[in-house]
Image (cartoon, rainbow, N blue to C red; front, side, top):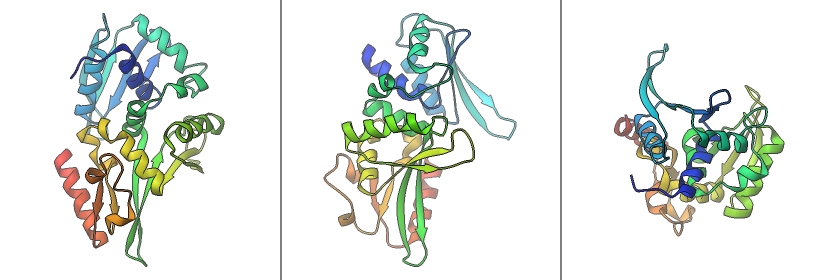
Length: 240
């Protein structure tokens, strides 16, 4: 990994902490659980560039039969400052921390809490690409801050959709050209283990904005819906 600046480290950590990362309020230490070894190793490498940070990165076996990876640190003054910017009585989206989200920050939110759905229309034998930011841990007024940030800084519009299973019961939905812009934005920072979260399918490339950066990598053509199923299986096999 290249040597990161202090600002780059902070931008990455904002994305991680506003999604799957956690700071222990009692001990000022960081913790992350992920199913992907590549992501665990990447986060550990980022943390290793903070002076005096003691990092642990070990497999964690789940009772449900799969193995994930836990990255954690010992207490460190860095987390005291970051906790103050991310937590109040709970983890929160605020005007301050949302304004700090860069393309790289959003890539980590997408890798941790993003979900790419390929909705199938059997009547037309076509596919609709839908992106979800599964951020139900935040109430609507806080998600609105993120919505506004995406519009003002990246021209990405998304809608708030009820998903009442847990948390505050809403998540953000991104579709069409807005989804293409979002994937183009985060693509350079997405690790290979999350490649399946970047593939958009179209019956012909004229339906997509091929002028977007990296569009030739994340926009795929298909003839039949079965092509998408086949491609998804190939991705799963390649990425483990």
